[in-house]
Image (cartoon, rainbow, N blue to C red):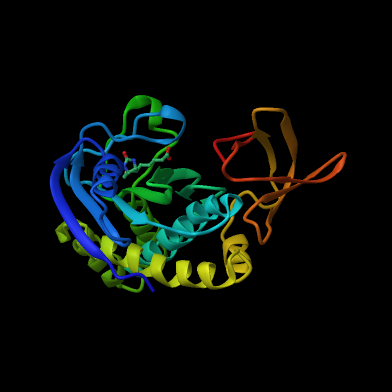
Length: 275
Ligand code: BTN
């Protein structure tokens, strides 16, 4: 298991960038950076990641894995699994995973993961950057249909639950969750995420692949049975997603048989919606 060292900042440009600086200063494996606010948060494919003060989790972990290149991309999958499990434990909310690196709820993104690799003195370092929308209530217009937060989802569940329970005079469960969400400074969920990561990463490192996690990952994978298109540098692969394999590849059933898509190389879109 990894020994963690937590470093918290009020405001940073990007927790992944702080991680890079610390790696250059030879920080130990298990260094975790978190911040109340990111002013220049980064997403995949050069996109901006909005992380306003106090409403979301922005955190990055430093690892020095000695895995073959092909398996580095699996760390993103391990992180997605961890966030999903941590949110469930934290407030009961059921999220899904959109391969490889999004955690989603109500078909909208609640968490994004940016895994980056760098080399220092010939040693490979990996930064696992996780952003979770916890208490966001407003999103930029272009993200309104695509992004949600834990608070948004728990609040809407509460409305549904009220309907179901109105004759039973029982509103306790969700009002407790709401209070906890509003009062907590996001540290409880932050620790839960990295605790879960430690559990799953240990299983992953011991087998050297996703074998011990495939079943759980596929149980929560929203892409399964859906038509997807994987865009890579060489060609587009379109077909029905079957799930991941032990290498963490997405297996897609196409007219030409099964195709295997590696997480490091592509983005996947459902053809009919965000997922
Ligand atoms: C994505 O979905 O495009 C990935 C988003 C990753 C955001 C996190 S927030 C913490 C870490 N620091 C960053 O600048 N980005 C990642």
